[in-house]
Length: 373
Image (cartoon, rainbow, N blue to C red):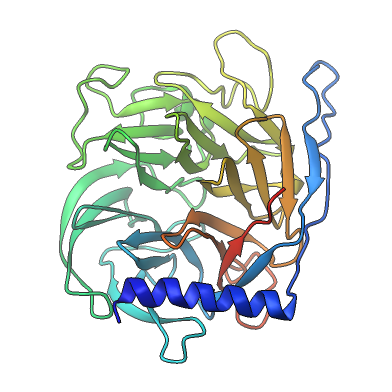
């Protein structure tokens, strides 16, 4: 039986088992209170989730950061070990086993830096990672078949992205235009976010080889948008809108709709400011309830993995002023959410990074099928 068929059959078997055992989980509801008396924007409507199906895909990961797929095969990055793992269906058929594909040379894990975002395009794996001198993006030819994958020699895509102990950004993804996008933090120097000559505090857009697309908003520049503090999630809806999640400092975390060439305000503003020249977020949350990292567009909603907020937040595309909260305080810190080839949503926990409270089996990937609302 092919791997893709094993993947799909396994998913159906688990779903039937879950239904029979009535494994029903629901999230808790918390509002996003706005304490800024100058902001008349309505408080987003927050509801709790209906009963849902969820199960472990794999457990025992060490500070995982990103999930991507090479065809049907899941690939995972581990921040501190610099390992790229592939997940292989287990012989028992109950979950996936981990296999090391490679360790990325030159990774210098420190603070929030290390092996961060992964993306796949054609037969290449792209990796964003921290070295002793910079953040950079390299790509590697993917060799072999699922279950025995390996990586070819590194090819440089982009170097000299500012690095720091924190605010490294690190999410990479290919947009519907086949361009590579990368989120970059301000590297602990907020003023760099407003300096278009710097790559820090930006969302970058490039050709797959790292060159500047001719239609970028600023001539001879990789900068696509600026004024960002530490964005770590990007995704596109079917109508082409680009969404990004961003860590605020101590007041507001944000969900933004990204427009080419736009200024999102940091460090001049944080959250909704209604100030000329800056683009306001479509939603904001107190930092205690969010710390948004990876995001996914799935089933008509933006799903946002939250670290400090320890919940999966769902924002319907049809009503960006509402949200549904899933699994609050159930699985700890959540780092990434991604739409999987089998039609489910996969969620990556992040409790082994020194800031969480690991439970037995952490860190893990969870397979989630939201209930019909």
